[in-house]
Length: 309
Image (tube, rainbow, N blue to C red; front, side, top):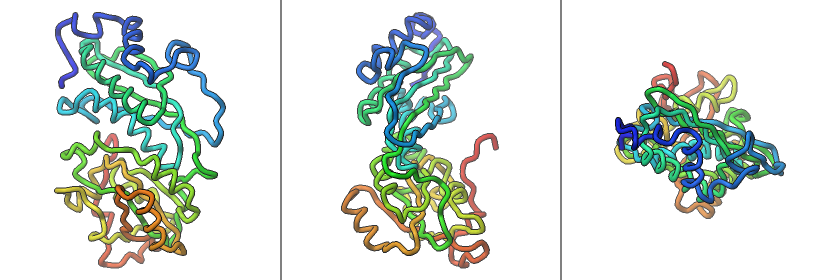
């Protein structure tokens, strides 16, 4: 659905900022509490966190993260879920969100309503209230940015650092062909899986796959080490090539390092018992730089998504 119209009466310009904010309150419904704990004050108010606080921010931009082939509800859902995936990657629990919207005055009211209803649906599904935000004019486009506050769900927060040489590398779900299959907006953030992993002491480091496995694994690798991947073990979405699985991005799966001393068989069995519908694959291990077997994938041959390149 194209979000723009040349008919002023059908656009956001027909309402202006104050009436548009009132409409957004209606569209969000129970997903947004009243001020001072929701939309309507200068700042949202949150109760003290029980654990370490987590904060992440991600946008969706018309022409970059979605286009006319993606429904406005799906675009709103994708915005929320992108941020939820970041919280999942650290084993966290999401608490509250704010949305900043910059849009052209020609944006259709019907489009924007469905966008916010998509946000509200994800808010209710994951019990994460939308407690505030902002609206500004942006000539010629749409940029929606969501900031999500979360907290540690376990005694520790799992970060990207901590992997060791010898650790095995695991990934949830399947990779590649995310754009063509629609997975980039249909995906489910791995919140429960991330929290479960954070409670396993043998899980050393973790990240969510947004820019492609080849790029994100470089961030996860310990200093002086590299990933040695078995190409046949990398789980691929239907129709995905190895290059797509390694470099396309927007998979929103979890990839993590498991200690070499961990019992991999018992670990995999425990995962299957807890998450029988979520595939888990051991795809390789971290080795010292230069010690990668000739049969392993050379990640230098693949490049993930990089902004501004």
